[in-house]
Length: 170
Image (cartoon, rainbow, N blue to C red; front, side):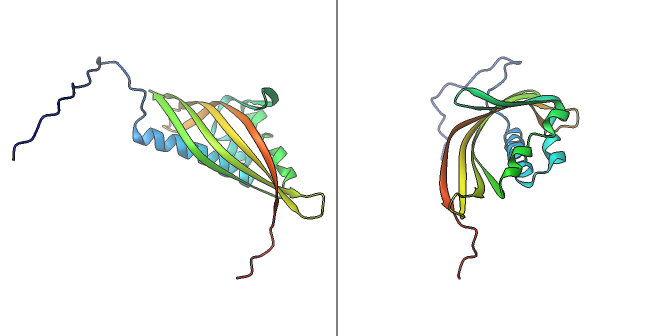
């Protein structure tokens, strides 16, 4: 059986024209960067957290358009996870992730559901859930690893719900 030719015209690119769609490996590595950030924050591992950023990187936290905090450089980023110490446990779930790569530079947007357990007023436990969007500028270092050059954390909304840490009766 003869193969049919596609009637769609071939996409032609100039030799130096870059495609906005990242190579699958870059896309995977950038998603893993976002997941490593969530894991380091949940473990309160300052060394692992800071290693995800360039030496001059900036992390800016916003809510409702107001800047709640800015951490700059590796020294400044060392204290970025300290506010999480107010919670007995956290769990940052990385959801949607989209990125565009241009050589050794990339931009990315990541959505996250961040759960924060804390004592409730009634003596129980409650979960402060934050719906977060991260807008990132990333660079690939000489070692081939992606790092954040700038990370903007925008808390889109929050919700508080009762939670339980009691063992389940199975």
